[in-house]
Length: 76
Image (cartoon, rainbow, N blue to C red; front, side):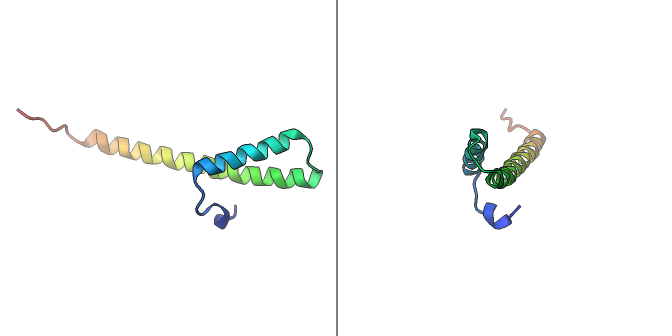
């Protein structure tokens, strides 16, 4: 996967691009070579989105673990 291509890409934009590529592939109007190219690019966007969600899930898990170790501020 080209790191420059995804360097400043946000998740929402990547999902839109992936959706667009899937629509192109499903249309059946692409040539064989264009289909291969679109499939490769769609896989790159899919990988980016999947990795992004995995990373976000890990961050949420870490935050939840930290939150669970905090004792509530009790006032008497």
